[in-house]
Length: 492
Image (cartoon, rainbow, N blue to C red; front, top):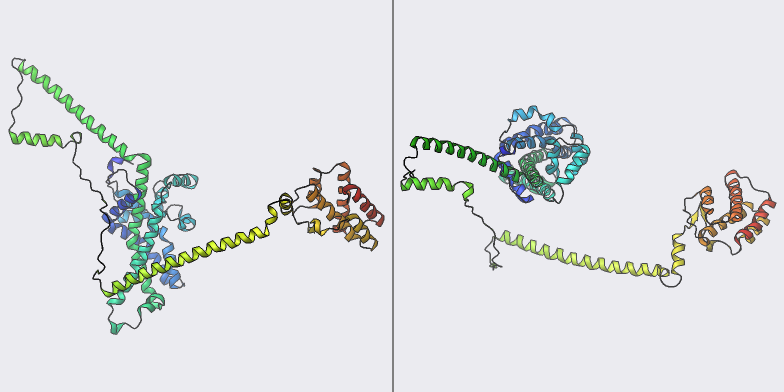
């Protein structure tokens, strides 16, 4: 890439000036860009609307979605045009598949949602990057760049406005005696041929906006690369080096010429200045002053704030415009009042929510707050067993013996195991997740229980697993022994 062949003036620009540069490029080559876009879009449009058995609205949506198929050739043509080498339309058509590249699937799927599509398209089409290098390049280019998203949003709105304008123009130009439909029906409830007409106007609107959209994104890309890589400074140094080289050649030639003159004259008479007429001297001075080293004349303009101007209330507008102004002003006031009402409603709802939350969580503040927080953070159930202290009797072992005497061994063993888990969680403050298994609970108990307590917990866990999963109930004497040992292990 030889920067000296650039046909655009590289200078520091803000993003909006970069978009304006792209618009200038689009105006300069609009016909070629429009033809390239139509060459790609028109066949797909005809296939979707005439050959595929899909509704017309779906065909239009698919044609709009396939924009990444039509836009890269426009970018390719622009990239050659700015270097004074614009290819022909036929040459671009021959390279169509190569320009689209192997990233077409990504461009038609997740990248289709990118609001900066035209801005980052040169990274894949012109630089040929893909994967992680492409992502890193896009991150560097997109840093503090928001104009690309606004460009996409503005382009979408202009397409809609242009399509509606074309449709309304067609309806207005149609004589009333030939018009068998209303404007609202034509726009919002179209019939078959009316839907087809909408598809055609939509295609025309997209074809007009596309060259400006792609060129504006390319202008943003050039501006950003010039900023990051200092293209303007590089070009300035190249021009300076060229001028110095030319002057060295001229100085050497003058030295040789002067030496030759001295040799011819033999220094017999002093050198005399050449006599010039006033017009010749003026022309020579003007030629010298045109060099950049002697300065140049520039004209700069800027906006100056002159204060608020008084607007005449009676603008003399037609009644339709006055009615539109009144409607817009009324809508603005109503929208402001609605926004203020919703804001106060949100503030009131927030205050009510805070009061209710404080009422429900007042135990988190004041005496006993630490215990309340600990109880709330502890699981309510483990293995589907309720381990809250309030769900257990005061004497776990005594209640288990009572259940055993009633002939309910499963309930007795379940109560003992629930009680042991509750003691581990609420007394020893052991952090047991609610999804823990019996084996995981036993492993966690090793961190807080002594040897005797751990031996009892192991025996109790094994007995509970055999009963719960194997329906193997221990002997009544064994269960009675577990009840007595529970008191020795955990107390009351």
